[in-house]
Image 1 (cartoon, rainbow, N blue to C red):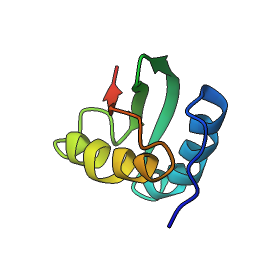
Image 2 (cartoon, rainbow, N blue to C red):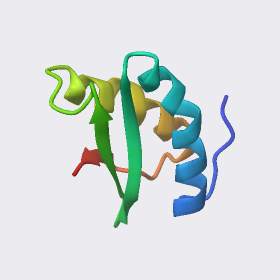
Image 3 (cartoon, rainbow, N blue to C red):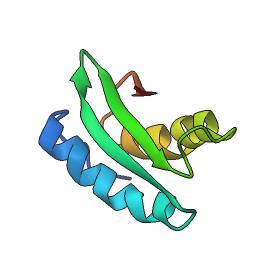
Image 4 (cartoon, one colour):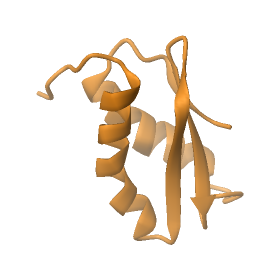
Length: 79
């Protein structure tokens, strides 16, 4: 089981850095924008920007990974 972390910008940014290589391997990238309420805001870049599978990448890749550490997080939005 993953360690639950405090839901703050610093911790979310650190966990996104761990996810980035997965996206970069496919020519994409992710930028942390901020946290609003319990929603993490990111910007998909590179080949992820406008990709037909971007929503799936966010929900089943990024969001699922982050929820292991931040169970109170509601979702991840691409802004």
